[in-house]
Length: 285
Image (cartoon, rainbow, N blue to C red; front, side, top):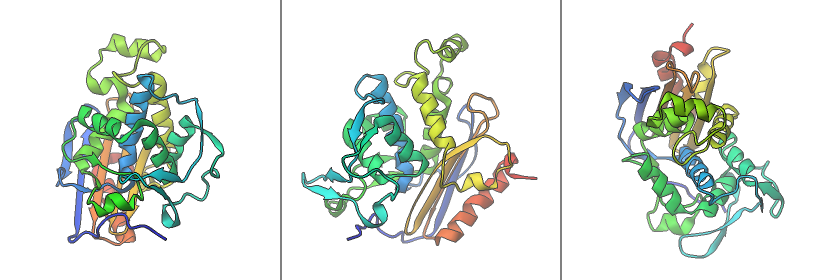
């Protein structure tokens, strides 16, 4: 059985937000419009997990048994199958480090890894992270593939503005929330946190996972040699991508989030890459 994921969109929409390193809006269209988040919600799970690790509530080095079976909102167990599965995911019961679950959640968009991480930290931890980021159009109310939650109308949503800001905080670390240069210099030496709630090691893990992205859209049109990392997301009728472009520590960093609804996948990708070429110097020439 293949479980449904989200209701098909009734209207075509393409929204975007382009931010600079300080979070200033350089370009936007429909930035606050909520879309079904698809796998872009995994960026919020990543940040929540790294905050939990910094607080001592999650051990990134610990090994847990891989699983495809989870507990739904109704308390019943459900097992991912069909299009929800990552064929490269370890067999049930195989030991896997939490750190590797985080990497697989981002670089290949593993739903199994996402649900397992979310169960380890809890949906309330993801909600608390969304609140801490100041996001207004984002919510994660259910695990991926939870049919009982879908039947109750629970969903996962975000907007281009929220997605861009989330990526900026995930990759920018301490600089994004106002640590001074002395704090950042100490963080570079491994002394103290990179930002409240996220260690420097967690920041490095996030950047590594995003750079290893195996399903890029915006990244496909960037010039060779340009640093970038991204997280895409897609289900029938929705296709999104958010990318950072440039040195995460540099003043020239750019963050572009593009969200689409109601378009075939190929057309959606064309709209996303067209915006990247229009808005990003590193996608021209």
